[in-house]
Length: 307
Ligand SMILES: Cc1ncc(COP(=O)(O)O)c(C=O)c1O
Image 1 (cartoon, rainbow, N blue to C red):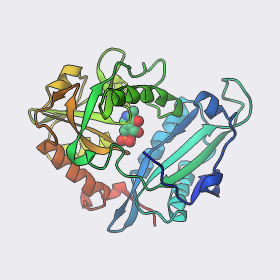
Image 2: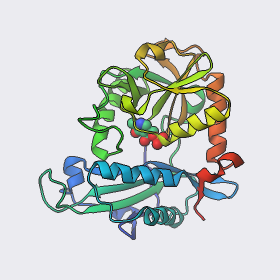
Image 3: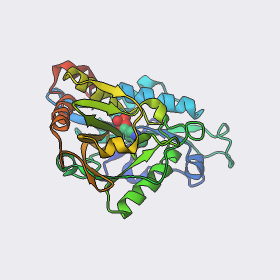
């Protein structure tokens, strides 16, 4: 998905012109993938631009940093303010926001302690990650031959730059095979998540989604949809799923900040019950978009106004 440049990128307190936001090629993060990051969206709401669950995203960033021994040289409140400053400095209302805390330039070698951690925040306009038609028409998904990380090898609970080479392998395989997205299994063979999304299966009117122990990223969109589905009266279970649960689903959808909520049309060539967007998926999508766009009083606390 091409990047639409904006004006400025926040780099350790300075708003730097977009084309000048550069780091040294020998930075630890470039050589070893030692950066923790977030993907966040800001939406236009009736009360002005609002970042969806910004505080929850920043909490996850700090948890990722704890896992990777990254000392972020700012507080959560400082980054909260810096993100809003970056959105305002770019004159954006609807945008994707990418904060990154990374090990910078210092020493060579895998020991990350001697290199200082730095922070950048970029924001730019970005459409739906899986394509503009994906939200209505759904996507074709392949169960990948690549497995998700074992939590004792690379912890899937953290959102770190280097971890995404695993997702990149799965995504490339799926695209080459004519699918739009990959779903990865855990080392034990349970469904984990997509290359950049969590997954829900709907069967007999009930929602099923893999638990944290399956090696998923604990998605904020996943959490949002669990809450919305329960508020709509659906039962939601977080339990281990295997690939046949996906093949025999009445409906399924992928969800994440970048992709938003995208129906799964078929899995490994098996068309799901509804051949497109199922009725429960559509109902939850509508409630999700109302929530992020600040149209639901019930979820207004999730709309953190840029001001
Ligand atoms: C592997 C993976 N799973 C799930 C998600 C969804 O997380 P969220 O809803 O917080 O964006 C993402 C996106 O960041 C991801 O990369």
